[in-house]
Length: 78
Image 1 (cartoon, helix red, strand yellow):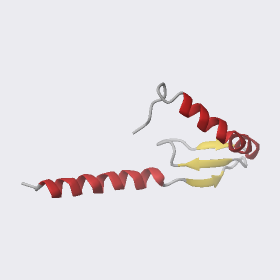
Image 2 (image 1 turned 60 degrees about the vertical axis):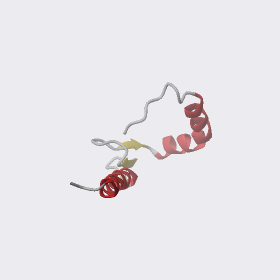
Image 3 (image 1 turned 120 degrees about the vertical axis):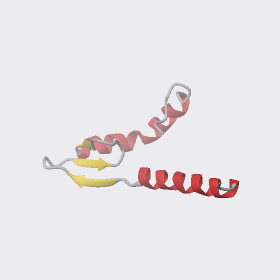
Image 4 (image 1 turned 90 degrees about the vertical axis):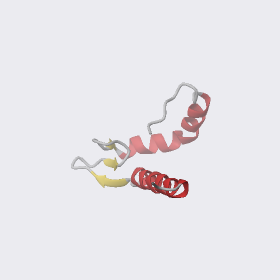
């Protein structure tokens, strides 16, 4: 039977593996010339044209503020 310390180490290793998998985001130029981000969604990349990415990047502070203001309504994918 594993000790409490061994159980905690196993849980820590599992959590680290999940974080490493989630943190792997790669980029690729699509066939149509858009930027695709892989690793955010299990099946499909997030693909936008550069103007759309620039719009989102400029909106980043407003997006962060919106998330903070609506945190109680938003779900986190685990």
